[in-house]
Structure formats: structure tokens, C-alpha cells
Image 1 (cartoon, one colour):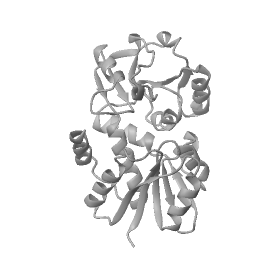
Image 2 (cartoon, helix red, strand yellow):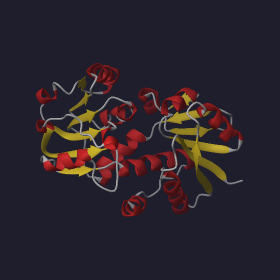
Image 3 (cartoon, helix red, strand yellow):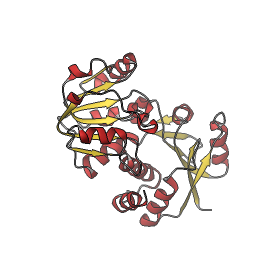
Length: 274
């Protein structure tokens, strides 16, 4: 029987993951099937267990189940342990479940390789303090930036996150109110859901350093409100999260199949399809 993989979420019909992983499999000469798996909001664990019984080898996990996936895993990678969220589950032959978080490595690779934006020695601003941001903090700090600042509408959430990761690098947290006192940043990442609703996080122009790279974890056919605002206010370059989507998928594929696909043609085709 062909090895089975899927992406699980609610809703899930919009996901591009099956197409991405099918392209990776063709490229690497791997025989596998990758499908969409919709789970009821209150039925994640039972849906996963049924998938395992049906011979499933691994799952990508998307909203809103990343925390539940974290709880389900018997072993967690270092990145997953700290982020409190899992987006990649591997079902081992001995019945155990391994959880990983590939979002951070995917974003870092997209920034450093695809966007040619070095993070070493840079001042980085992360907008938001939810699961999306939590998953990328440790991979960012591993790049040895000079400072990372997390900002959130509820300042205490950002401060708590900064404290949690303080042992890995120079990091602080706070609210939007005192952001103008923080100076300018070389890299700004929007990890809030504001782009879905077409809203802009309340950031002052003063946060944009000269040649600043602005990155939105969301993506669409058109630049997001955040990308447009940054471009209009002097950012050196902007990008959306499509590269992160493809790169985190490549890390997952490598975990499952021990092969690193070439992401460039896949990303290129996706951009054209948008």
C-alpha cells in the first residue's frame, strides 16, 4: 500500500499542501499519497487515531489544532517543545507519535535564502504573541540577531513570551503603546491575523529602519495591507508568507522521507497560480 500523508485542519479545503507535497514526491521519486483531512472541531484526536489505523504515516497540522497535536505527541522536537504547538506529526512503527514544528525553520529559510535577508546582528520586531509567533522565536534567536522585540495588544503576553525565551538570546516584549520608544528595526514580521480582516497593526513609521525587510506570514494574490503600508512608508523590501508555506512543507517532507526537495520551482509555480 502507498504511504499515506495528509494535512488536517478545520476548515481545510483551501489548503495548498497536497499539491506542494505531491510535487515534492514527484521530484524526489517518492511513492506517497497526500490528501486533505477535515476534522470536526471537537474530534481531532479521534480523527488522528483513525488515520493511523488506516495506515497513515504522518500529518501536517493547521488551524486550529496545533496545540492539540502538541498534547498528543509522545516525543517533541526542541522547537516544538518550546513553541507549545506542533504542525508535523510522524507515526512511528512502535506506535509512538513524534511532534515537530517546522514553521520557524521554514520562515527563517525563506528570509535568509529566498529573500537574501540575513538575520545575524539584526534588530527584529515580531508583531503578535500567538502560536504563529511563538513557533518562530527560537529559530530566529538561533540566527544570532542583536535583539528581538515582541509586541502585542496585551503587553503581558509579549512580556511572558520574551521571558520564556530569554535564555536563548537578547529578547524583550511589550505593548504597541511604547513601540515608538523602541527605535527602528531591520526586519519586521507580522504574525498577527490582521491581514485576514484587512486591518493594520498599530505600528508607527519610526519602527522601519532604512532597508528594513517587512514580512507578512499571511499571503494572497495581492500584497497585504501590512505589506502595502510598509512599502509606502519606506521599507526596503516586503514579502508575504507563501515562501514560508513551501519551505515549512519541505522541512516536513524531509522529516518523513529523509529527502530535501528543491523548493524553487514549486514556489515559482504557486506564485504564478495566485
